[in-house]
Image 1 (cartoon, rainbow, N blue to C red):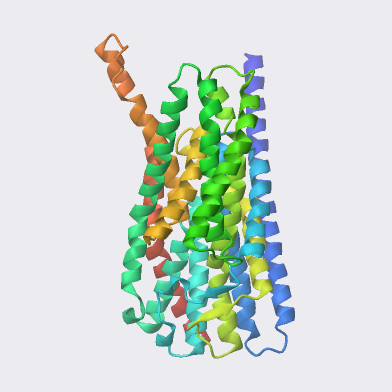
Image 2 (cartoon, rainbow, N blue to C red):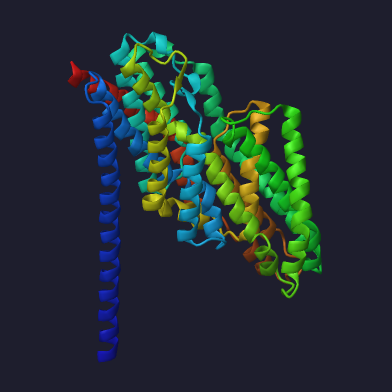
Length: 481
């Protein structure tokens, strides 16, 4: 009895210690995030000394840094979550790889010019004056950042692009009325809520089904792997080379369609030829089991996580610094975003560092949601999700379909989960009794609670950030008056 009481007391002490450590980490993370924002404030304040509109640039820089941290905390999880969930990478390893490649993508290949009104959904000429435009962009940026912060706290991966689009729409309507918004473009964005996850899920499920047919269904899975794993890795290399050129390197080089296909097929052929002997060597000595086959996809999966992070940093940093660049331009001149605005290097660096800091401090929660809480992933399934992300973005770009990289990646996770669920719930011909068949049919491999939470967050992202942005615009203009 005394021994039992001692064990109970020890468990309580351990739980208290764990809670105290978690609380301490939260305060430490908040402290480091605050230090970053203060440093941004000090830097921009020093550089804007003597500028009559410098206070607006300083405020916008701090909000942009806050937005960048929220992008890192929420959006980057989609690139590395499957790799962590499949145990191909540890949490710390994934965080470091993503932080380095996100920052590299943002600084080296991030767009040097951006549309000051994100996606061109609001007509800037409808704004009454320069200050109205600045307050509208400030409200849009802060609203998007606050919504991303809330979504991260709730554990829901949402689209940062949709968040900033909603912010711009809300502020635009509040500042210039309903007629200032391009509602046809907004309809296309709304369509992406359905198109993106469906395409991502279908492509990921198709590749997983193909792997099951040509490798896992064979008696000698390792022999089949020596033939087919290099093929799948070659396809990944071709897809990612095209993806990076189209999305990640568009600042540096924009090839024609023919050259793009040549890059894709050339990369696929080279990687296939180089991977074939490596896979053959790695497969010898392994047991003829599914876990052994899955291990052969580990290195390609790690590479895909790094490449996705690089492309994401190059492409999505504009979500953080686009409105900031618009405010800098408007505060420095009479330009209210009717064209393109050059991005100062310091603006891009704030975005790059902010994304990496947000990922390192607050990214693990969403990484676990994407990688572990939706469905169980191994290296093969996670590989299919990463491959789906690259292929779907390429296909959608050619077809002119508006898609969200976040929705595609999460849709891919759901796609492989529902495929596993479908294949596992097919009637078992070996089952001898009706009860055994029914038991097999009731098996669920995708958590419905996570599905409902994520879908709900997706649906309300644009209207929520729009309403918040409109409210912030009215607050800003009221106190300014």
